[in-house]
Image 1 (tube, rainbow, N blue to C red):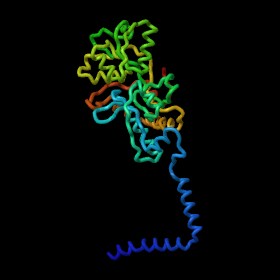
Image 2: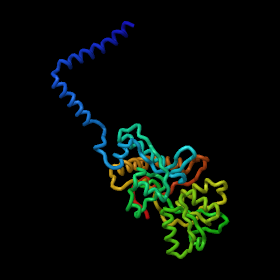
Image 3: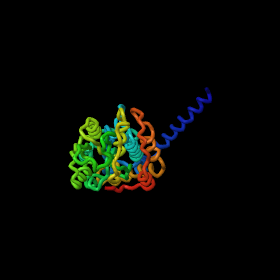
Length: 324
């Protein structure tokens, strides 16, 4: 007890002596030292709002980042009954963590806003969302309005039909009803193919992927055309996946990327840094295995969608090139 009392009294004595020493200094000197200390703290403090610009400044000032998320773009960004999950959503949250560190905002809040293929770009341009990492294709045409990160996924356009439909390739869709999702690059390609090759397809464009697949499943089309991994996702989610087949000669490669506002180099560099580190470190391949080669929520379905050589090449050499 005596030792504890001694050890406690010494710091108090030291503090009192220090206070008396400070009080003996002239008032002007004390004021000067306080000013210099404050200036020094400002120099070595983390980046503040007056050093930020664009989206990072908006996030810093608001204390919140607004993510655009999808409801039914499995396995990229979708609602599993509890929260948004997926391959792309995981990358988005990695970017959020990097923003937390960069802005020194450990309590940065995340607000999610559901977007569709049709409204995601307007919502970004109207500042309703700050970042969207879902299943958005980076195209040269879209570069006129939005900025895109390094690519996060390379894919082909896929076609799903019923096994008994007799349809095995795109040319066999001549004169038949088909379904796709409105506002997508696939819709644009499909309409161009229809016109250039006089296929006379009757095209139905649904508001979102889930609506499009439902229209196909309810016999409003002989085929649903969309990005191949999304097509595989819907096939796996049906009650009887053996009744369907993904078929058709690929009509070219396209890439998904995260989307943000143009003219924002600070955010672009931060986002690309996260993506490139993940791809070259092996983390992206582990993420791929998690979402494409293992059971995923909510029904523990395995897409069994092996990684393509194109995705391996992307992970080895990260880049932001559009492929259309």
